[in-house]
Image (cartoon, rainbow, N blue to C red):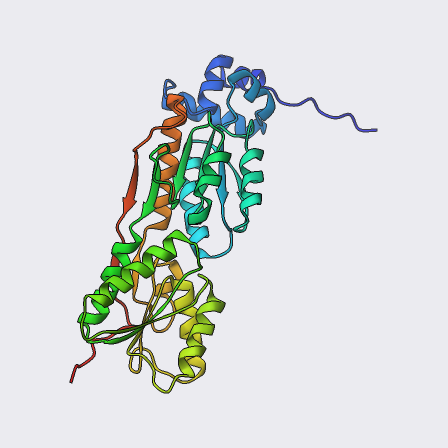
Length: 341
């Protein structure tokens, strides 16, 4: 019967690296008061010995889990992929871990996910874009835990919030389409009760209302490719196509593009098409997609950096802090200027 080898301990790393146990601990936990050559030496020895710190023991001794909780409404789609890329990049740079949970738009499951984070994480990143759930969210956030909100319509200022100026972005896109000569513009909306969707629709409607010659139409959507495809098919059944289609996010725009492509409708020669978010795929489809650029990864990274700042200060909340990112118009091949007779 084989005898199990004893586990490598922090003392073994210290002995091999010829430094103190305290220095090893500081080096592995990213403290700044360690000379960089010493840190690299400790990390190299730890890798060579395959030393893995015992998470539970470290948590007991430092009262820190070195873990951030991330609660999202969904994990599917390029928006969430980009958001998590930005969050993970900052967390890894500071040697923090992520505990991720998704509630799939179910309010009760959101409460369960938030409560499950207690005692497991040192801080929370929460995205809750549903306008009807603001009170429920506030009632379920662990009160003593540093928390940063992302794209969440909570306006009382109790927690720092990072988000997107969706109204300004949709206003800018609609104005661009109008200035390009498009007058009949269809808008594919996002899901009911979603704050981002509502603000993007409001921006579209405000821009259209300010143009006397404009004719707008709103179609239902769900922020996914299937709903964009269904909206495209609905437009194809009409006697006349609109001059342009503006989808409230890129995934719906790509679904609509596929419906048009199947029907032989040429974009942008017969109808212009635009989206919102500038997901990575937007520049690689044919034709490449005109969109409002939101630095989604940057949004996640900024929120994470702020949360780590709160954790470092042992500050559960810092009301009023946060950032609202203004989207930037990116014109690509899916739109073109239309001659107005």
